[in-house]
Image (tube, rainbow, N blue to C red; front, side, top):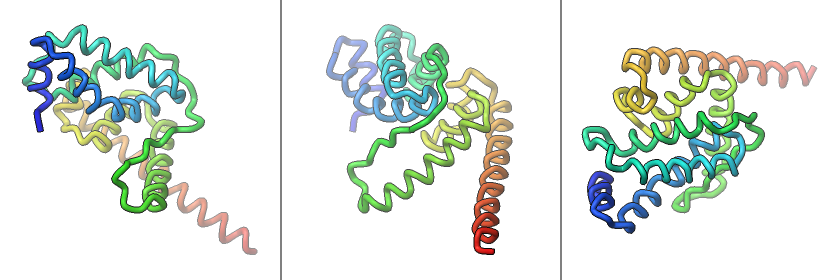
Length: 186
């Protein structure tokens, strides 16, 4: 499989097909991320489109010292900041075509969606973005810091605080639900 960096080089040399391959690789991932930021599919799709337009326009400025994913997410985050922020009412889940069991995948997706909805409610935008990039996109601390234009120390502390806040909230929610079930039987 050809690397992102090779596709960038080919794109810079004039290959529209190479840039199209980059779009295909990142379109769904960026859309999933931007859906959580905008709360509205149309706005998220607009932000994805703006991200790729900006990426194409400024592709010459890409530094292969960083992963392409770090660079493209940095653009997406900046574009999302310009989009109106709405309340998330319904997050679209993009199905994985290779999922072995659709029901199991649906259950996992719903649980994951609830975690991210809780994270969206609890955390500020930068902390939420750091958590998403780490746990959904599997970026390193260094890559997250670069994408968010923050220090590595800020990134580590923010991830730690975000995990603690989210864990406490989810634990409280679980015990609250169990408590309601017990009291509902009396």
